[in-house]
Length: 308
Image (tube, rainbow, N blue to C red; front, side, top):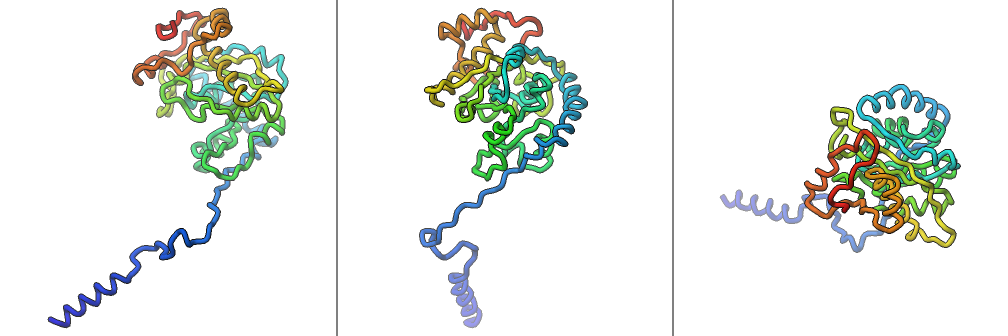
């Protein structure tokens, strides 16, 4: 009996000194500093080479465009401004759905679409190889890393190569269809590289395919998109001053699409353009307001109660 007890005591004594985990016995404050390892973002330079451009042209014309038109209806306004504009430019748009990117690209004239790249979140579109290859080949995306990885290409390098950019300054899709806070990245790029910003406003993509939905709703929902006059940062205008001007231009285009050009211009001149972030009310009401598709005919509907 004493032998068994002695054995148990030995096991207990050994267990106290046994390392049950892999944690270092050296305090972290005494460990040498090691730089955090950075991941390399998926390279996308190949998508802007001639073979990829040719393959993308076939994919967009033969597959993407017919599929897109079969699921939604579109109305495009303001393309005449591109006839008076020389690229490259930065297209800045609100972001409410995965339909936003194909809507913008397929609305552009062919010569503009072929030379336009799209900034996309690396942690979403480039987290798997098949999604990365698909988005790069079909939409000419390049990654914007939000987690501190090493960039394979920067927006400035893409602009320097003569490509226009599509940027969603909100950084992510809206959860209720209303426009969120604009970050200053697009304004910084435009100011730094001396390129104009073309504001773009679209409506109906949230109603057709909101966040969390993987396919457009039935019934070919109506989508509208408007391109505004190019904005150029003044020589003495800072990025913090230029960024709100871009957001205001997108808000004015949204107002114009909901009402008329004349009414929207009058409100813009008087500084009374409706707030694109929407009414400060219950979340379900905000979502409900955006589930209605734009009118299929002329954009001359009356203003809703929240904008009076």
